Length: 161
Image (tube, rainbow, N blue to C red):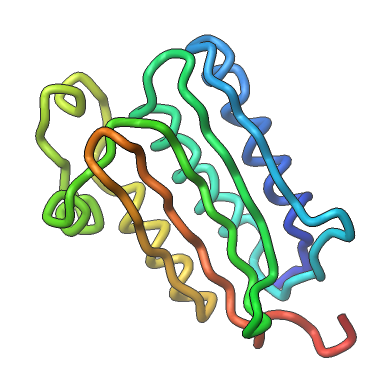
């Protein structure tokens, strides 16, 4: 089902779903959207919300108490829209990122062994992004956190915007 959604609507809904958990860990969660907002996007808003919820849940899970989670939405030069979820969590090296993007892939470390999960959040998020003509990729460094970047192509933005 295609619907039109603006980034703030979808982001606000996903952020609201993790707000209590974030508050319990005393994490700081910031959302940055351009002052003029972003154009509407022709997507299944429910699926994009699911992607963001998966990314926010991971950021929360792998970020220590009093850590920071940042959501940044922007329109980039090529006309695509990116929504990045960055955290100050444990981070991953290149091999760990490959494992994390595989179905049922769970990165094994002292920190992650204490976390629950099936290892499906990132692969599902990437699959949904690709179904929308976009993609999901990770940037990460051990000990410095992870940034997951959802990209939606210009083709998803109606010509009138």
